[in-house]
Image 1 (cartoon, rainbow, N blue to C red):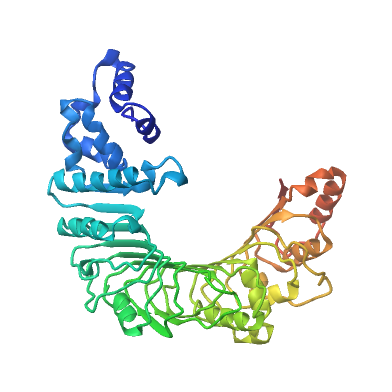
Image 2: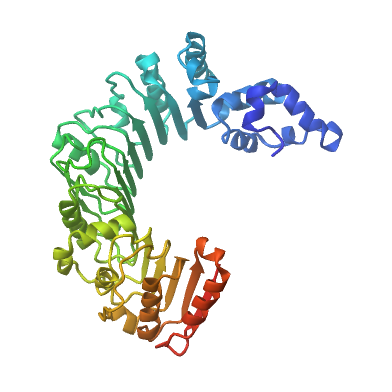
Length: 470
């Protein structure tokens, strides 16, 4: 695109930029202006509204094009050159007047997407008027990032709406919900930083009033005011919960969240399980990503909650878990026998180093995955304790394991034993890819000796290819 970029608009005269770029092509002949209005409107929709409006100075052809753009994107940070200036009354007035002007002058056709990122403290009533204006023009996607210093209530029509398909709300305050909630066409709901009110029924109504919801993300929200919430959405396909607490990690007095979504194909959880998460349904082809950071307190209780969370993931086909998640499971070793067998699981990825855990417990986890085909170590085993005398053999190594990717290989005795264990007992293994760590490359002689040692290891599979590389 030769029109302009976002940086140029803020620092140069728009018309000068346009004329310079036009003269550089075809001897100054303006090809862009010959494009149909619908294409030019589509191009302008990728720009922040401030820059789209700025194109009106280019020529008569461009003067009114911006009023037909169906996507509005207002961001007050574009007006401020530094944090020190963000409260300057001139800038604030300029931004508010600009939004008023755009909403007043634009064509009254439907708005596809309305994004607003601003500080509500300047004028809460004006912010609500802008949101109401977008709703009146049948906005389909509402994306609000609101910085709040005092209690703020969104217009009730946001939650009682038959048009909205997408709601993305980031707001660092209590989420005040109206008595009536009905969003029958909503497909995507993202909530970030909100604090749920002390009203289980109203919050329950929010999730139950979206019968066709397909994507739900609850990110860094505060659940502490709630005791129990049930999310039963048969249409839900994507669920993301980022549950890192505002308070101490040791405080586990959170909400019990039960999720029943039989068509779920992607589940991502990140947090310390300060809230209890129970999953009762998902697709057999689901991918689950679980990230529990390294624990500092309440390890046993968090470990038990982790085991219960894994109990709800019994049908997943792919699983990616962090080293902190493994640590949490290991702190509940007495409950490992309560883990179900993951009969559909074919892919397992382990992220992070196993600094304080034994391979014995890792193999206990593998025992629960009889159909595992792909095993990926993103960071290797790290400084794992040496269990080279352990003889326990997981079922997956006999029947299903085909590919092992092992990254960050340091050449420790524990690592060599574990790779020997897999090579010897995985009778259908097709390939093992071992990638050296950066530190190991500093000693090429030792690297060569270890490489020869690995290639000399016995293999249970006649067709296994061992690749050791950087």
